[in-house]
Image (cartoon, rainbow, N blue to C red; front, side, top):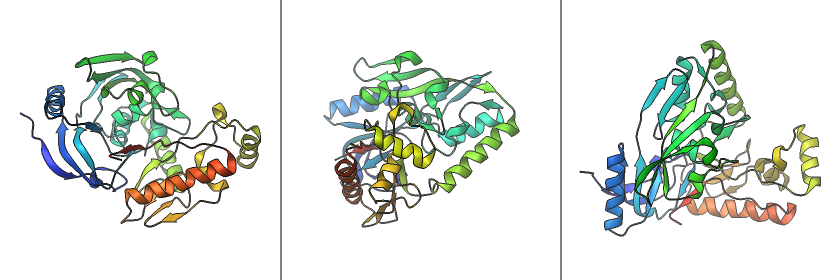
Length: 309
């Protein structure tokens, strides 16, 4: 028998530390509990929202008027270099566990907040690595067929910060099978330390935010791409220009609205300086989108999921 709770604060469950209350809330660890929760929401005519690590989501100040289902399964099964890992496992701790087992493949994602499930859903990436690079298959619960389905990597439709699981709301990531390479513990840990240092220099550790707020957009104007490449000495992969650089170009680095701001060291972060509200985040993000569109002709879109708006 599942325990549906009412009027639960959502802010502490997110890295933004912003948001109202969930009208109804349940944490599930088994497929059976997930199925019971979905049956309950259907019986009571409620919408549902899946919450994992809370690192890539912004809840409305009014919260979510439905059932928030928190995926909290935590299995990690090691079969030589093939790993079965549950969606609810925290990504940082998982990478540390793999290092202890001398398994290499995700060091460049060390320090990325959230869970394995959230990383799979959004094809999380950093420093030239995306989680799709080591995925064999993903098991996801389909709320339409009411069955657990297995997706081979070629059927996951992975692309930049996207997947079939992000585009089709009926699919709930439950676990993934990953392939790692054998490595040396000291070399793996050295790379993890290096990545963490890089993240610290960019002000992307230990702040209240949802990570990169905007997707790095494809830019059709070659003059803008060339200007970026000349200034930064980097190549635009897939014609994508970093959203943070575009925000800098329109003079909005460190811009404040109330108690939130764009990052002073990494402009594609919107940071809650304690007391921030979802309304302030939306006002600031709208300002950023408008200025980048009007001055550079580039349309930014959110990487962060907006819930309850």
